[in-house]
Length: 418
Image: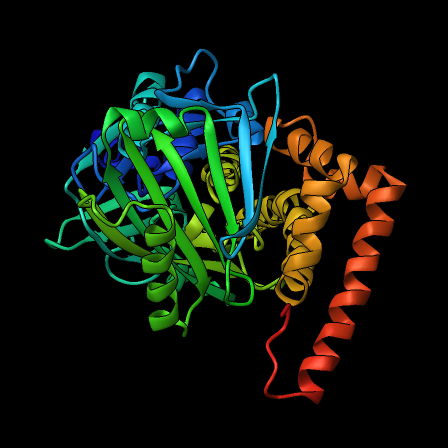
Protein backbone atom coordinates (compact mmCIF):
# COMPACT_ATOMS: atom_id res chain seq x y z
CA UNK A 1 0.00 0.00 0.00
CA UNK A 2 1.36 3.44 -0.89
CA UNK A 3 2.14 6.12 1.66
CA UNK A 4 -0.65 8.26 0.15
CA UNK A 5 -3.18 5.51 0.83
CA UNK A 6 -1.84 5.04 4.34
CA UNK A 7 -2.29 8.76 5.02
CA UNK A 8 -5.86 8.52 3.72
CA UNK A 9 -6.57 5.50 5.93
CA UNK A 10 -5.41 7.42 8.99
CA UNK A 11 -8.16 10.00 8.38
CA UNK A 12 -10.86 7.35 8.62
CA UNK A 13 -12.15 6.61 12.11
CA UNK A 14 -13.22 3.09 12.97
CA UNK A 15 -16.32 4.35 14.80
CA UNK A 16 -17.87 7.81 15.02
CA UNK A 17 -20.51 8.32 17.71
CA UNK A 18 -22.89 11.27 17.45
CA UNK A 19 -24.13 12.51 20.84
CA UNK A 20 -22.39 12.33 24.23
CA UNK A 21 -25.34 11.43 26.44
CA UNK A 22 -25.45 8.10 28.31
CA UNK A 23 -26.05 6.11 25.12
CA UNK A 24 -23.36 7.79 23.04
CA UNK A 25 -20.72 7.76 25.77
CA UNK A 26 -21.44 4.08 26.45
CA UNK A 27 -21.12 3.26 22.74
CA UNK A 28 -17.87 5.21 22.43
CA UNK A 29 -16.42 3.55 25.52
CA UNK A 30 -17.35 0.04 24.35
CA UNK A 31 -15.77 0.60 20.93
CA UNK A 32 -12.65 2.22 22.40
CA UNK A 33 -12.20 -0.63 24.88
CA UNK A 34 -12.10 -2.95 21.87
CA UNK A 35 -9.01 -1.05 20.71
CA UNK A 36 -10.66 0.90 17.89
CA UNK A 37 -10.16 4.56 16.91
CA UNK A 38 -13.29 6.26 18.14
CA UNK A 39 -14.51 9.84 17.77
CA UNK A 40 -17.33 11.08 20.02
CA UNK A 41 -19.12 14.21 18.76
CA UNK A 42 -21.35 16.41 20.96
CA UNK A 43 -23.10 19.58 19.80
CA UNK A 44 -23.12 21.22 23.25
CA UNK A 45 -20.32 22.07 25.62
CA UNK A 46 -20.17 19.76 28.63
CA UNK A 47 -21.63 19.88 31.20
CA UNK A 48 -25.00 20.72 29.67
CA UNK A 49 -28.53 20.62 31.08
CA UNK A 50 -30.90 17.79 30.22
CA UNK A 51 -34.58 17.58 31.15
CA UNK A 52 -34.64 14.40 33.20
CA UNK A 53 -35.56 13.27 36.70
CA UNK A 54 -32.12 11.72 37.07
CA UNK A 55 -33.16 8.47 38.76
CA UNK A 56 -30.47 5.79 38.59
CA UNK A 57 -32.15 2.42 39.03
CA UNK A 58 -30.40 -0.94 39.25
CA UNK A 59 -30.18 -1.67 35.50
CA UNK A 60 -28.55 1.74 34.97
CA UNK A 61 -26.05 1.16 37.77
CA UNK A 62 -25.16 -2.27 36.42
CA UNK A 63 -24.47 -0.88 32.94
CA UNK A 64 -21.95 1.70 34.16
CA UNK A 65 -18.19 1.36 33.58
CA UNK A 66 -16.29 -0.65 36.23
CA UNK A 67 -15.22 1.67 39.02
CA UNK A 68 -17.50 4.48 37.85
CA UNK A 69 -18.28 6.82 40.75
CA UNK A 70 -21.89 7.96 40.64
CA UNK A 71 -22.29 11.66 41.53
CA UNK A 72 -25.28 10.93 43.76
CA UNK A 73 -27.22 13.87 45.17
CA UNK A 74 -29.52 11.66 47.24
CA UNK A 75 -30.22 8.01 48.06
CA UNK A 76 -33.86 7.00 47.97
CA UNK A 77 -35.24 4.76 50.74
CA UNK A 78 -38.91 5.80 50.62
CA UNK A 79 -41.56 6.45 47.99
CA UNK A 80 -44.79 8.36 48.50
CA UNK A 81 -47.49 7.38 46.00
CA UNK A 82 -50.55 9.55 45.42
CA UNK A 83 -53.48 9.58 43.01
CA UNK A 84 -53.74 13.10 41.59
CA UNK A 85 -52.89 14.50 45.02
CA UNK A 86 -55.18 12.14 46.95
CA UNK A 87 -54.84 8.84 48.79
CA UNK A 88 -51.15 9.44 49.52
CA UNK A 89 -49.22 6.66 51.19
CA UNK A 90 -45.51 6.25 51.81
CA UNK A 91 -43.70 2.92 51.54
CA UNK A 92 -40.20 2.59 53.02
CA UNK A 93 -37.26 0.27 52.59
CA UNK A 94 -34.24 -0.36 54.80
CA UNK A 95 -32.10 -0.83 51.69
CA UNK A 96 -31.57 1.91 49.12
CA UNK A 97 -34.05 1.71 46.26
CA UNK A 98 -32.22 3.91 43.75
CA UNK A 99 -30.03 7.01 43.53
CA UNK A 100 -30.57 10.51 42.18
CA UNK A 101 -28.12 12.46 40.03
CA UNK A 102 -27.94 15.76 38.21
CA UNK A 103 -27.71 14.91 34.53
CA UNK A 104 -25.04 17.52 33.67
CA UNK A 105 -22.62 15.93 36.17
CA UNK A 106 -23.60 12.37 35.30
CA UNK A 107 -23.32 12.82 31.53
CA UNK A 108 -19.99 14.61 31.77
CA UNK A 109 -18.50 11.79 33.86
CA UNK A 110 -19.71 9.21 31.34
CA UNK A 111 -18.07 11.15 28.51
CA UNK A 112 -14.86 11.32 30.54
CA UNK A 113 -15.02 7.54 31.01
CA UNK A 114 -15.20 7.14 27.23
CA UNK A 115 -12.17 9.41 26.83
CA UNK A 116 -10.31 7.45 29.49
CA UNK A 117 -11.02 4.28 27.47
CA UNK A 118 -9.37 5.87 24.44
CA UNK A 119 -12.13 7.74 22.59
CA UNK A 120 -11.53 11.28 21.35
CA UNK A 121 -14.23 13.79 22.37
CA UNK A 122 -15.14 16.88 20.34
CA UNK A 123 -17.76 19.26 21.77
CA UNK A 124 -19.51 22.19 20.16
CA UNK A 125 -19.88 20.17 16.95
CA UNK A 126 -23.22 19.90 15.14
CA UNK A 127 -23.82 17.05 12.70
CA UNK A 128 -26.07 18.02 9.81
CA UNK A 129 -26.34 14.62 8.10
CA UNK A 130 -24.64 11.34 7.24
CA UNK A 131 -23.98 10.03 3.74
CA UNK A 132 -23.34 6.41 2.79
CA UNK A 133 -23.15 7.02 -0.97
CA UNK A 134 -22.02 9.98 -3.06
CA UNK A 135 -18.95 12.12 -3.72
CA UNK A 136 -18.05 12.52 -0.03
CA UNK A 137 -17.70 8.75 0.38
CA UNK A 138 -14.37 7.39 -0.88
CA UNK A 139 -15.48 3.73 -0.82
CA UNK A 140 -18.45 1.60 0.18
CA UNK A 141 -16.87 0.71 3.51
CA UNK A 142 -17.03 4.34 4.58
CA UNK A 143 -19.69 6.64 6.01
CA UNK A 144 -19.37 10.42 5.70
CA UNK A 145 -20.50 12.41 8.74
CA UNK A 146 -21.13 15.93 7.47
CA UNK A 147 -20.82 18.71 10.05
CA UNK A 148 -22.74 21.99 10.03
CA UNK A 149 -19.61 23.93 9.02
CA UNK A 150 -19.08 21.66 6.01
CA UNK A 151 -16.32 19.51 7.50
CA UNK A 152 -16.56 15.84 6.57
CA UNK A 153 -15.60 13.13 9.05
CA UNK A 154 -15.13 9.62 7.66
CA UNK A 155 -15.86 6.42 9.57
CA UNK A 156 -16.18 2.68 9.02
CA UNK A 157 -19.26 2.68 11.29
CA UNK A 158 -21.46 5.35 12.87
CA UNK A 159 -23.59 5.23 16.02
CA UNK A 160 -26.40 7.76 16.33
CA UNK A 161 -27.10 8.73 19.94
CA UNK A 162 -28.20 12.29 19.29
CA UNK A 163 -31.42 12.39 21.27
CA UNK A 164 -35.12 12.02 20.59
CA UNK A 165 -35.03 14.51 17.67
CA UNK A 166 -32.15 12.57 16.12
CA UNK A 167 -30.81 13.44 12.68
CA UNK A 168 -29.19 10.01 12.58
CA UNK A 169 -32.49 8.40 13.55
CA UNK A 170 -34.14 10.20 10.62
CA UNK A 171 -31.45 8.82 8.30
CA UNK A 172 -32.05 5.30 9.58
CA UNK A 173 -35.83 5.75 9.31
CA UNK A 174 -36.79 5.26 12.97
CA UNK A 175 -40.58 5.06 13.35
CA UNK A 176 -42.42 6.09 16.50
CA UNK A 177 -45.79 5.14 17.98
CA UNK A 178 -45.76 6.99 21.31
CA UNK A 179 -44.68 10.57 21.90
CA UNK A 180 -45.00 12.19 25.33
CA UNK A 181 -44.37 15.67 26.69
CA UNK A 182 -42.37 16.04 29.91
CA UNK A 183 -42.30 19.36 31.77
CA UNK A 184 -39.87 19.90 34.62
CA UNK A 185 -38.76 22.56 37.09
CA UNK A 186 -35.61 22.65 39.22
CA UNK A 187 -36.74 24.39 42.42
CA UNK A 188 -34.21 25.57 45.04
CA UNK A 189 -35.73 25.31 48.52
CA UNK A 190 -34.64 26.26 52.04
CA UNK A 191 -32.78 23.64 54.11
CA UNK A 192 -35.84 22.89 56.26
CA UNK A 193 -37.92 22.08 53.16
CA UNK A 194 -35.12 20.04 51.62
CA UNK A 195 -34.84 18.07 54.87
CA UNK A 196 -38.50 17.01 54.63
CA UNK A 197 -37.76 15.36 51.27
CA UNK A 198 -34.33 13.86 51.93
CA UNK A 199 -34.26 10.17 51.01
CA UNK A 200 -37.87 10.20 49.75
CA UNK A 201 -39.45 10.71 46.34
CA UNK A 202 -43.05 11.33 45.36
CA UNK A 203 -44.82 9.66 42.44
CA UNK A 204 -48.26 11.08 41.67
CA UNK A 205 -50.53 9.27 39.22
CA UNK A 206 -51.93 12.20 37.24
CA UNK A 207 -55.32 13.38 35.96
CA UNK A 208 -54.59 12.71 32.27
CA UNK A 209 -54.60 9.13 30.93
CA UNK A 210 -51.10 7.69 31.32
CA UNK A 211 -49.75 10.77 33.09
CA UNK A 212 -47.79 11.04 36.31
CA UNK A 213 -45.74 13.54 38.27
CA UNK A 214 -42.61 13.25 40.40
CA UNK A 215 -40.55 15.00 43.03
CA UNK A 216 -36.89 13.99 43.17
CA UNK A 217 -34.78 15.67 45.91
CA UNK A 218 -31.18 16.60 45.09
CA UNK A 219 -29.70 18.40 48.08
CA UNK A 220 -31.31 21.82 48.35
CA UNK A 221 -32.98 21.53 44.93
CA UNK A 222 -36.17 19.60 44.16
CA UNK A 223 -36.66 18.29 40.63
CA UNK A 224 -40.42 18.49 40.05
CA UNK A 225 -41.97 17.30 36.81
CA UNK A 226 -44.94 15.76 35.03
CA UNK A 227 -45.36 13.78 31.81
CA UNK A 228 -48.31 12.94 29.59
CA UNK A 229 -49.15 12.25 25.95
CA UNK A 230 -48.17 14.89 23.39
CA UNK A 231 -51.18 16.87 22.23
CA UNK A 232 -52.20 17.66 25.80
CA UNK A 233 -49.77 20.54 26.19
CA UNK A 234 -52.08 23.00 27.95
CA UNK A 235 -53.46 20.32 30.26
CA UNK A 236 -49.95 19.04 31.03
CA UNK A 237 -48.80 22.56 31.92
CA UNK A 238 -51.86 23.00 34.12
CA UNK A 239 -51.12 19.68 35.85
CA UNK A 240 -47.57 20.82 36.63
CA UNK A 241 -48.79 24.16 38.01
CA UNK A 242 -51.42 22.48 40.20
CA UNK A 243 -48.94 19.81 41.28
CA UNK A 244 -46.41 22.41 42.41
CA UNK A 245 -49.17 24.32 44.17
CA UNK A 246 -50.41 21.26 46.08
CA UNK A 247 -46.87 20.62 47.24
CA UNK A 248 -46.63 24.12 48.72
CA UNK A 249 -43.77 25.03 46.38
CA UNK A 250 -45.41 27.82 44.37
CA UNK A 251 -43.60 30.49 46.36
CA UNK A 252 -40.13 29.29 45.29
CA UNK A 253 -38.68 30.46 41.99
CA UNK A 254 -37.40 27.64 39.74
CA UNK A 255 -33.79 27.95 38.66
CA UNK A 256 -34.64 26.02 35.48
CA UNK A 257 -37.95 25.33 33.72
CA UNK A 258 -37.80 23.04 30.72
CA UNK A 259 -39.71 20.69 28.47
CA UNK A 260 -38.79 17.61 26.48
CA UNK A 261 -40.46 15.12 24.14
CA UNK A 262 -39.88 11.42 24.74
CA UNK A 263 -40.43 9.03 21.86
CA UNK A 264 -40.97 5.24 21.77
CA UNK A 265 -40.21 3.23 18.64
CA UNK A 266 -42.66 0.91 16.91
CA UNK A 267 -41.92 -2.79 17.20
CA UNK A 268 -40.84 -2.96 13.55
CA UNK A 269 -38.85 0.28 13.48
CA UNK A 270 -35.35 -0.13 12.02
CA UNK A 271 -32.30 0.21 14.24
CA UNK A 272 -29.74 0.39 11.44
CA UNK A 273 -29.14 1.41 7.86
CA UNK A 274 -26.00 0.25 6.13
CA UNK A 275 -23.10 0.99 8.46
CA UNK A 276 -25.14 3.27 10.73
CA UNK A 277 -26.72 2.15 14.03
CA UNK A 278 -28.93 4.06 16.46
CA UNK A 279 -29.33 3.61 20.21
CA UNK A 280 -31.02 5.22 23.20
CA UNK A 281 -33.45 8.08 22.54
CA UNK A 282 -32.28 8.29 18.93
CA UNK A 283 -33.68 4.78 18.42
CA UNK A 284 -36.86 5.44 20.42
CA UNK A 285 -35.71 3.06 23.15
CA UNK A 286 -37.24 3.70 26.55
CA UNK A 287 -39.73 2.09 28.89
CA UNK A 288 -43.20 3.16 27.62
CA UNK A 289 -44.98 3.25 30.98
CA UNK A 290 -42.52 5.10 33.22
CA UNK A 291 -40.63 6.64 30.25
CA UNK A 292 -37.41 5.65 32.00
CA UNK A 293 -34.66 6.09 29.44
CA UNK A 294 -31.28 6.20 31.18
CA UNK A 295 -30.93 2.44 31.59
CA UNK A 296 -32.16 1.88 28.03
CA UNK A 297 -29.58 4.36 26.72
CA UNK A 298 -26.72 2.84 28.71
CA UNK A 299 -27.54 -0.73 27.74
CA UNK A 300 -28.35 -0.08 24.07
CA UNK A 301 -25.30 2.19 23.79
CA UNK A 302 -22.99 -0.52 25.02
CA UNK A 303 -24.45 -2.98 22.51
CA UNK A 304 -24.25 -0.42 19.71
CA UNK A 305 -20.58 0.20 20.44
CA UNK A 306 -19.80 -3.50 20.43
CA UNK A 307 -21.63 -4.17 17.15
CA UNK A 308 -20.26 -1.00 15.54
CA UNK A 309 -16.79 -2.50 15.98
CA UNK A 310 -17.88 -5.57 14.05
CA UNK A 311 -19.48 -3.44 11.33
CA UNK A 312 -16.26 -1.43 11.07
CA UNK A 313 -14.41 -4.69 10.46
CA UNK A 314 -16.88 -5.89 7.81
CA UNK A 315 -15.28 -6.11 4.37
CA UNK A 316 -18.49 -5.78 2.36
CA UNK A 317 -22.11 -4.68 2.58
CA UNK A 318 -23.39 -8.21 3.16
CA UNK A 319 -21.23 -8.73 6.24
CA UNK A 320 -22.06 -5.24 7.54
CA UNK A 321 -25.76 -6.01 7.15
CA UNK A 322 -25.34 -9.29 9.00
CA UNK A 323 -23.71 -7.54 11.95
CA UNK A 324 -26.40 -4.84 11.99
CA UNK A 325 -29.11 -7.50 12.07
CA UNK A 326 -27.34 -9.15 15.00
CA UNK A 327 -27.43 -5.81 16.83
CA UNK A 328 -31.16 -5.52 16.11
CA UNK A 329 -31.74 -9.04 17.44
CA UNK A 330 -29.79 -8.25 20.62
CA UNK A 331 -31.91 -5.14 21.23
CA UNK A 332 -35.24 -6.78 20.48
CA UNK A 333 -34.58 -9.88 22.56
CA UNK A 334 -33.73 -7.81 25.62
CA UNK A 335 -34.90 -4.20 25.70
CA UNK A 336 -37.63 -4.90 23.16
CA UNK A 337 -39.25 -7.46 25.44
CA UNK A 338 -39.15 -4.99 28.33
CA UNK A 339 -40.80 -2.36 26.13
CA UNK A 340 -43.57 -4.79 25.21
CA UNK A 341 -44.45 -5.37 28.86
CA UNK A 342 -44.18 -1.63 29.49
CA UNK A 343 -46.73 -0.94 26.74
CA UNK A 344 -49.16 -3.33 28.37
CA UNK A 345 -48.61 -1.65 31.73
CA UNK A 346 -49.19 1.80 30.21
CA UNK A 347 -52.45 0.67 28.63
CA UNK A 348 -53.67 -0.81 31.92
CA UNK A 349 -52.52 2.22 33.91
CA UNK A 350 -54.18 4.66 31.50
CA UNK A 351 -57.50 2.89 31.95
CA UNK A 352 -57.29 2.00 35.66
CA UNK A 353 -54.89 4.29 37.56
CA UNK A 354 -56.77 3.82 40.84
CA UNK A 355 -56.41 0.04 40.61
CA UNK A 356 -52.68 0.32 40.05
CA UNK A 357 -52.30 2.79 42.90
CA UNK A 358 -54.28 0.62 45.31
CA UNK A 359 -52.27 -2.45 44.32
CA UNK A 360 -48.90 -0.73 44.83
CA UNK A 361 -49.68 0.79 48.21
CA UNK A 362 -51.83 -2.01 49.63
CA UNK A 363 -50.51 -5.28 48.22
CA UNK A 364 -47.16 -6.29 49.69
CA UNK A 365 -46.00 -8.46 46.74
CA UNK A 366 -46.55 -5.47 44.41
CA UNK A 367 -44.33 -3.26 46.58
CA UNK A 368 -41.76 -6.05 46.74
CA UNK A 369 -41.77 -6.25 42.93
CA UNK A 370 -41.29 -2.47 42.72
CA UNK A 371 -38.26 -2.65 45.00
CA UNK A 372 -36.75 -5.56 43.05
CA UNK A 373 -37.10 -3.68 39.76
CA UNK A 374 -35.66 -0.41 41.06
CA UNK A 375 -32.72 -2.20 42.70
CA UNK A 376 -32.03 -4.18 39.55
CA UNK A 377 -32.50 -7.71 40.86
CA UNK A 378 -35.09 -8.17 38.09
CA UNK A 379 -36.85 -6.26 35.33
CA UNK A 380 -40.55 -5.78 34.64
CA UNK A 381 -40.29 -8.31 31.80
CA UNK A 382 -38.24 -10.70 33.93
CA UNK A 383 -40.81 -10.53 36.69
CA UNK A 384 -43.64 -11.40 34.32
CA UNK A 385 -41.59 -14.19 32.74
CA UNK A 386 -40.53 -15.92 35.97
CA UNK A 387 -43.39 -15.30 38.40
CA UNK A 388 -46.81 -16.86 37.67
CA UNK A 389 -48.50 -14.38 40.02
CA UNK A 390 -47.05 -11.46 38.07
CA UNK A 391 -48.23 -13.00 34.77
CA UNK A 392 -51.73 -13.47 36.16
CA UNK A 393 -51.79 -9.94 37.54
CA UNK A 394 -50.72 -8.42 34.22
CA UNK A 395 -53.28 -10.52 32.35
CA UNK A 396 -55.94 -9.31 34.78
CA UNK A 397 -54.85 -5.72 34.17
CA UNK A 398 -55.04 -6.36 30.42
CA UNK A 399 -58.62 -7.58 30.79
CA UNK A 400 -59.61 -4.66 32.99
CA UNK A 401 -57.96 -2.22 30.62
CA UNK A 402 -59.88 -3.76 27.73
CA UNK A 403 -63.11 -3.47 29.66
CA UNK A 404 -62.26 0.13 30.51
CA UNK A 405 -61.63 0.95 26.87
CA UNK A 406 -65.02 -0.51 25.92
CA UNK A 407 -66.72 1.54 28.64
CA UNK A 408 -64.97 4.70 27.47
CA UNK A 409 -66.00 4.14 23.86
CA UNK A 410 -69.58 3.46 24.95
CA UNK A 411 -69.68 6.64 27.07
CA UNK A 412 -67.86 9.42 25.17
CA UNK A 413 -68.36 11.90 28.00
CA UNK A 414 -66.57 9.81 30.62
CA UNK A 415 -62.86 9.76 31.45
CA UNK A 416 -61.02 6.45 31.86
CA UNK A 417 -60.06 5.76 35.45
CA UNK A 418 -62.58 8.12 37.04
